[in-house]
Amino acid sequence: MFNLTNGINRDFTNNSIPKGESIMAYRSDVTYAILFRELSCKRKFVSLYKLHPVFSKALNECHGVDDDELRISAKFDWVHWYETYDDVKCHMQMLESIEADDLDGVSAKFARVGEESDDTDELEWQGYDAPHSSDIEVYVVNQPQIYNRYL
Image (cartoon, rainbow, N blue to C red; front, side, top):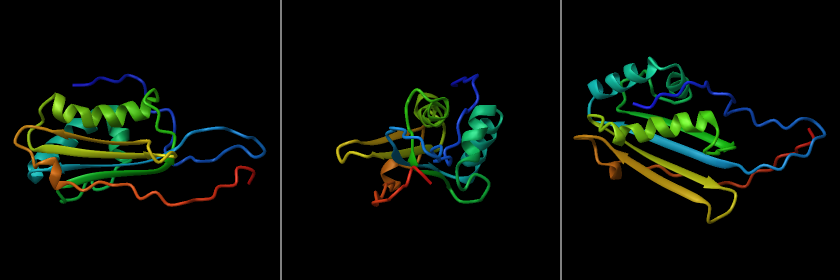
């Protein structure tokens, strides 16, 4: 199991740039979904990851964690998604652990679209006896947006 000791140090929803400052930064739209074979698999996954303070924070940023649906999903718009950031590591390691630890009845799919048309990632993970990741549709719709950095 992955063991992160550093906490998540930035808020995915904080897209503000200080007034009057020009900051050059590359942003992405990111989404992922985790699919479970049955509710008991989801409950086991959630209870396991809620015990870890960093993974718990990642789960708190997801949708569908505490309901009876057989999926958990996350969506982050216009964020800095750098592999060196602790919170990004946390989300990615949580997803990677599905296959690395061969989690029973769990699969996931991930999509990221950057600012450039050729900057995309699509990844998938498959645990033991899990729904096939082709059963998950994950995509990012990249829509033009205007941001005024001086507001």
